[in-house]
Image (cartoon, rainbow, N blue to C red; front, side, top):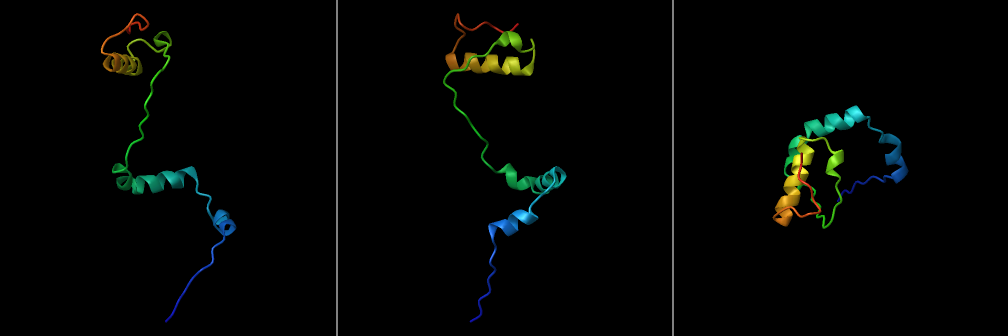
Length: 84
């Protein structure tokens, strides 16, 4: 019976692993299909303070935040002002 093996030290790996941003992007682009089936990150937020006055009026972000607030609470409260 033959048995072959290689001893790889962590320091040896670190010496040869220095990909550039372009190489990382190229790898991602060529393997993009593998990431399509991955589970997207999700977060649950119980409370958030958002100053809608500091978010550009009519922006997609402002509209999305407003939609999330009104959908999760069912209605706006006196503490929440509607988007302008």
